[in-house]
Length: 212
Image 1 (tube, rainbow, N blue to C red):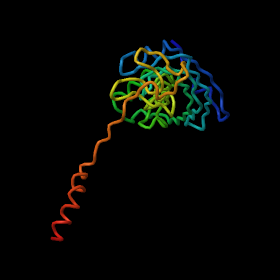
Image 2 (spheres, one colour; image 1 turned 30 degrees about the vertical axis):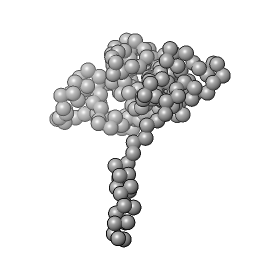
Image 3 (cartoon, helix red, strand yellow; image 1 turned 180 degrees about the horizontal axis):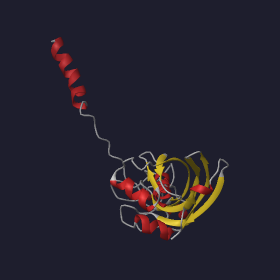
Image 4 (spheres, rainbow, N blue to C red; image 1 turned 45 degrees about the vertical axis):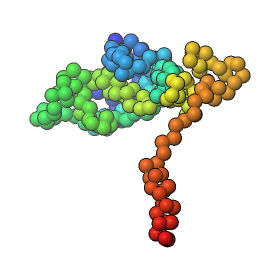
């Protein structure tokens, strides 16, 4: 397991640079692999970080890069997604009399860090802080809420289940045969008629009755 740790006593007001790398094995051990989390790490996560200390406060900021295989929310095909995001964390010392919730106490005891709800502020205690939980949360926040293989993805036909981007029922790409994406499906979209359409059709009849 990688050790993402920083020694507080070595930090000064001059930013000190750190580089960490996390493999897919590390991510799987943290998050697990379930149908609700169809994510495959295709390249290690790289963390470029600078840390400094001003009196008792610690400032940590940097960026994260990586590549994961995600399932498109429209067509359900897996595609490579490049992660690139920034993060910033300000830590203040946790006083002995300061009370935190049980999870916060666990973080201070195990990692020397208690993260806030917004993940941009927190508390630290002791000479060494371990950033495993923070970097794990940074990866989770960098993941797209609705993954898309392409902004122009046409998705799956709700009638026949064919990928409208050009993938046929047997999984073959019909675009290889010189056909456009529409060739994958010839279903017509069903348009739901407005519930007020009936009233609109009755209006001429009512008008004619009033004129009589």
